[in-house]
Image (cartoon, rainbow, N blue to C red; front, side, top):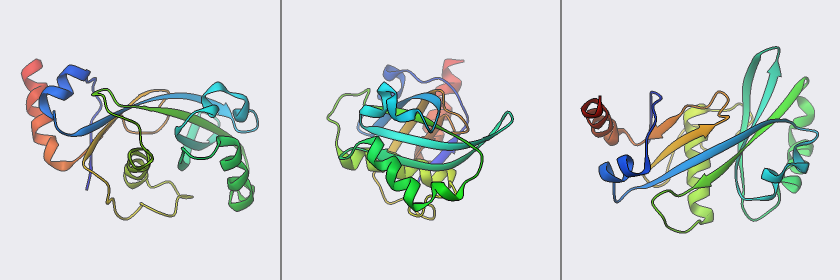
Length: 172
């Protein structure tokens, strides 16, 4: 299980000193790109996570969170168009998130899947099917930075809440 915390800045040293044995991830978000031209963006060529939004005026609504690791974003987008994007009317944009591992370690598909599942569990986008009711991944902390749209800045396991709040109060 994971828990949402309020927004604040965390440094690599600060987080590592509190939770040295836990995996934590920093996601650098870029976008929002019109979905029609998103495939041409450099961010679309790597692995990571992405968020699709519907924009109405100045408001945006999160519709879907996905990940790409073994296949290209262009291929995944074509699947979305066949499966559900055709149902959505209006202006669609996409944000790309590069998943980083500030404490070191290797990138793996299972880590990227855990990040995606945690994001879905917290935000419950309407077009995601899995991970909306339960989160069964590893205990993680996620720090969203950059163009995060409507995503929460910090996501973590409930037992970390007290430790993080206590540590933050000491730094003030």
